[in-house]
Length: 405
Image (cartoon, rainbow, N blue to C red; front, side, top):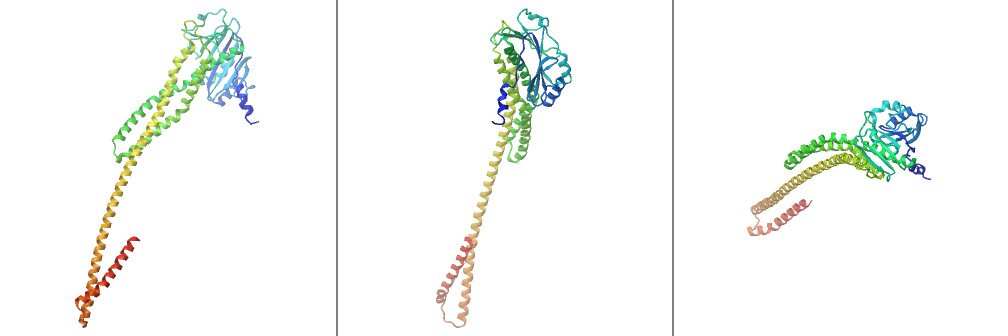
């Protein structure tokens, strides 16, 4: 067997739901933090039943079932407290749980209370909802009401009315509702990040426009300074992208889970009330779209800055090639001039050598004539012509040989 065979197969049984019958109060808390904070809190609440290597577990807290789950950047606690038929109103967080989370309250990102009850004797007005939303879920087997308004302690309240669900279906349905609220809050974490980035992105846009105009009008002399400014802007954009990429990616993932869980509710209209899914989507989608637009804006800025840098480098490269071509043309002209000068010098050298040879042979002829040699000028010229031509031929051959080397 592969060493991961059992671990991967058991993922099918991960994240179990709590199964219970109504009436009951369900208290759900989601806290930001890593495994260290999770283990610390769980150690305070139930130190004897927590396994440090487990990702989730179900135990009991003060006699009530408590489920805990670890996620990548948060962890959740879900406590189910059975309620008698006389206790079908909102209840405060049990003291056993409130005492344990007191020092962790600033990390609570989501707090939900679900009151689970039957349909008999229902008086919706007694639950204090203001303009509530309601949906028939699970194909009409249950009803959910909420006005999505936070209480003074920051809790969102849901009224879950069971019609035909057994304990297993009821537990899974409430789990979906709790996940919708938790994932919605986690997805909304990037909203403040996107708003904080907006002024910075506006400044990046203005800087990019100014650099584009400089690139269109500047000469090659200012290319170095312009390239440094583009590089500086690129560093700032890339830094912002890297810092916020994880948060925006998490928003996409959490938002997808929210919409999937809404679809799993199988909602239908309940009278003239607005459905819970419609209420959440209409107010949650703009947040997701705004964060996605901010992320896309960052990516487009990075691409635009990179393209501007490429354009500047291409222009500088073309200018350098033009300068190199001009230098080559200048070198070719200089080489042609040197060749012409060299040819002129060679011609003058041959003329000078010929002149000196003729004078030399003339001196020889004069000396022979003085010594009494009977040579006419014509004979002397005919005798000197072959040696002169031979010497000139040898000189020209030496010049050609030197040039070929």
